Amino acid sequence: MKIASLTFLFALCLSTVVKAQSTDFKDYKVVYSQGFNKDKSTDDFEFSDASKWLISKNGKPGRSLKCLGAGDYTSAHAGPSIVAVLKNIELKDFVIEMDVVQNGKDFNLLDFCIFFDIVDTSQYCYAQIAGKADKDSHNVFMVNNDKPKRLGKVNGDGVIWRIKDWHQLRIERSTFTKTIKVYFDEELVLDVPDESNNKGLIGFGSTNSAIKIDNLKVSAPAYETISKTIF
Image 1: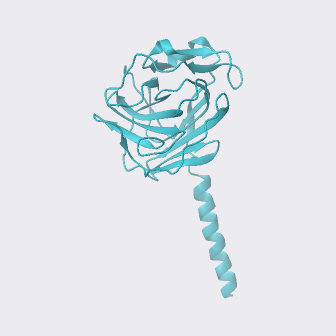
Image 2: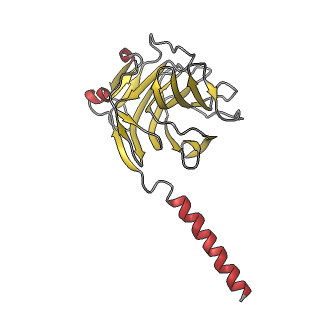
């Protein structure tokens, strides 16, 4: 009888855990998706330097959004200088997925940034997925009228960006679990506590890398439509 009771309790706990894991994003719906197959796809975004962004013929598959590298824009607070902001959609909780390829020279620091909680050029957050990890890179950062503030512990290793190879990125932001998780080719590479309850626009970019983006998908339990200019 005691064994049966313990078995039942174990099964109940296991069921609860599985249910929690499988329903984390059950209320999320796709609020935006983009394959960048048309030239006018860029109309959905505002760029820090629009002259550096274009639609490329080589995507995964089909066409993609291409950035030629850093332009004339310089962040006022030493943040990333290559930024594309998705217009009109303000989010708090979200999952962002996309394919990314490094398309330029093999610099010492190859990286990709996913921006969120964007209010203006002086207030935003970003997750940086970088080829090396130290106190200033490969982490989640907040810019609040000052230089970027690291939110997580210093990581031991960055990721391996292979030039010309497509990589799958995914970021999960939950104000319920108070976490920000970033996956690189399905491997969890950043897991950072997030005590904020902010919302804002989202975007992507880099500190210095030439990049391509394809198959962008944004999911969320809710969103607000706003009209504002960042740059």
